[in-house]
Amino acid sequence: MISKLEHPLEMLSTEEISLAYEIYKTSEGYDEATHFSQISLVEPSKEFLKDFKPGDPFEREAKLIGRDSAFDGGFVATINLSNKTLNVERVSDSAQVQYTVQDIFTAMTLLKEHPDYQAAMKKRGITDMEKVQIDPWPAGGIVHEKIKQGHRALKGISFFKEEAGDNPYAKPINGVIGHVDLTLGEVVCVEDHGVDPIPDAKSNYDAASQKILRDEPKEIKIAQPDGVGFSVDRNKISWEGWDVRVSLTPDEGVVLHELSLNDRPILFRAAMSDMVVPYGSADPMHSWKAVHDGTEYGFGRLSNSLTLGCDCLGEIHYFNASGISFDGSVEVIENAICLHEEDYGIQWKHNDGMGAPNEVRRSRRLVISSISTIGNYDYGLFWYLYLDGTIEAEVKLTGIVGISAYNEEKHNPNQDLRISKELVSPVHQHLFCMRLDWNLDGGNNQLFESEIELMPDDDNNSYGMQFQSVSTHLKTEHEAKRDISPATSRVWKVVNPQKKNGMGLPVAYKLLPGNTPKMLARDDSPPAKRASFGKHNLWGTPFNDGEYAAGGANSVMHSGEGGLEDITSGDRDISNCDLVTWYTFGVTHVPRPEDWPVMPVEYCGFHLIPVGFFDENPTINLPPNCSSDKNK
Ligand SMILES: [Cu+2]
Image (cartoon, rainbow, N blue to C red; front, side, top):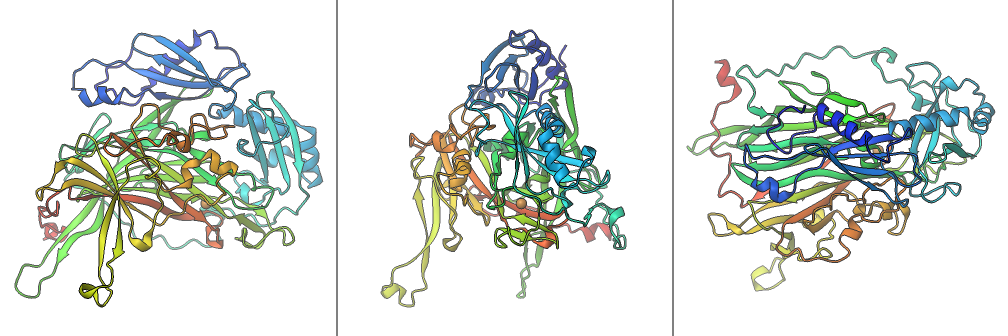
């Protein structure tokens, strides 16, 4: 019996996940080797959702993904939870479904039991396998010669963990890479690039391991004695005119649905489609790395249970999210999404010295966030909604950088940066691709590029100091492949040509890029093929159901077909359409000593800002109370 749901975009409940598993167990393909990667809601069509009214009937469907004993890429089952039917599609052997937790443990166990691996450890003085931590990494992209086409694989690198609780990354075991064929259930090769000494220093990051702790800082208390400013109805949030529905999907993490302001739609759906972390080092422990953390391991699937006062501070509302474990049991991530309000300094101010009033208003923002831990790295995904109509997406990068024991003869100091006396960390990038499905003020949208150009020298511009803002309509998918240009103040505008503001001009939102690279690897390199979304910062496509995956569906062992480069290969018309923009942003990480033993948060992201969406400053009507007024 499924509890009553009120909206078709509510997250899958634990009961629905159990039911999906029960239905799948009756399918022909289900066997003793069946392991699940993930489960997600099949979201109803855009038309259905746009017409949906409270009380309308709706069906629920789940997509259940996993692998079994068949020698292909696994299965994708669509399960109708309302009428209990299912449809199973097999993934061809050119790709594999997402890694399961079982895959990870299988790789660790097989390697530790393998004589070649044990011999490689012994060469380094390690005989106690309990003290070895193996990190399995995706084996796609640069596939080892012993892994056959159509096989699922992982590459294991190792760390020496002297005592339980130690930071294993302080003691990387250089040289050894174990290749595990998960389809065969075998170790097919243990590469050994030579022995380097294992570092001595421990470099633990917990408080008890620090020689001196700072004095406890004075408490900052965030209290909202009158209650919070937002309201939550199941997974719908309302705040200061904003309405948005949130969910957490296994690949994307937090998803914003049907985002509107003052009942004017802005985004139909916004989510992180994929991400990639290409490494730039020649060190054999890293030279092959370009993991799609979001889709190979699951950005949402690996979300943390957030803690009050630590992960999130203030008056918090949490949303739980549920998924499936490899064995079919339900996994609940308690407090997976954090919702709260933050004071954000001043919204606007003017101090008039000539008799007009002195006025200042405070800003605040609504924060919707989650944090995912993928191996050594931790990523926060933060969405902020502001009082002035601004939407901000921010990724917070923290956790522990990739590591090798320093070897002066082997390491190029410009590729492998010294972060401690004994350790180097390779240069690498983190590139995130945010898919923004627009519904700006309802109806079709257009995409423009705006930037600044100098006016020509003439009698009107004799000092050569005049410039103007010029806009170019990006009419096709190829025209919309664009890169940032901070020197010309380049932004992109999404426009609704049918909806005019009080000046008779079409309403718009601009995408304001942050400082961001694009992919540095050569265009025909394995990472660039697999993560083609990294080749440009901006992409635009006409909405087409099924086009969600910037790196192609089922990215494990995949060479990249079906990603954004393929999606846009037909150069479709986007001149006036149901517009989707894809924005790739991130950081090129040149590790520094301050990143060790754990990285202080580094930030990247972008803003979406109204441009003529309103007729005046939409916060002019904020009441003038300052917090000190309340204390009088
Ligand atoms: Cu990094």
